[in-house]
Length: 392
Ligand code: F3S
Image (cartoon, rainbow, N blue to C red; front, side, top):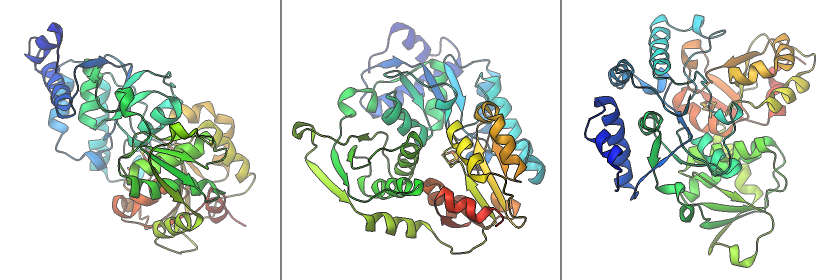
């Protein structure tokens, strides 16, 4: 792998151990995936910020890195952490809160923006064609497939290293030849509800592994439908990018083809649902974090109704979107629902809050909750989730 003279000096430790370690992480990764050089990036996004998912092992390293004085050199954002300052911090064990806050301070010290969201593209939309180093699979697939930015699916450490060096290896989907569709997916099922897009994503993630699909038959999906599709696909499989078109010329067609029918969607929805309880402990909307449009839609759908007193309704989003949509979030709050920011039901400790059953409209959340939350799950459309959560 070619390194410039400057990069070599960093690699050899002339700029201190912290930069050296970061450069070595990037070079190792580049060598593993046949990169020829490092390329500059415009942004980095680090996952593994929640103490629940990170644990204690990397804390000493992060502490040493933060104390080294090295700072991020590009737009650097953070994935959700384990706490919501308004609603959850006071309900969780003190030791978890303390450890989580310590982690957040370390990232802040390194210059990261305290975004705490899996939808950093709602804070600053990346331009088409820019190179980035984002971790958080749902954001990566959205950036590549919907926004036209270029990012591999980084791990927490490589995104952190890229944020400090400002570069990433030119491998994977940073190369045009690796972004081409490899398999055609003809969707014959009618995708009628929001949740059907997530179910399609899980179905495809399970069978495609890392093959890049060219999907036809989606009709006119909204950006939020595509967000659900990509998030689910990336959680069940290793897909970083998908293409979708309704009219495809023969010469554009990849050689392999599969079809998806209504039965595949129905079976996937059933497989992701593990309980038929009419009263979940928690109804969770906002995985990935809600957009402004989703917040408005939820407020309008709730209207003047109230949340039942025997369950909780969480609407998860970033504090950035919450501030932008105050008019609607106030309406949502008046119903008794909680606008949860900076975290989500999956990466906070719902088990410590006594939550044993979760209803959600997110296939990604339904895919993870049985393990991450030790919870039974019911997957249903936004409409049905709200109907369950609200008084008649
Ligand atoms: Fe985001 Fe949490 Fe879902 S981090 S993508 S809301 S699991």
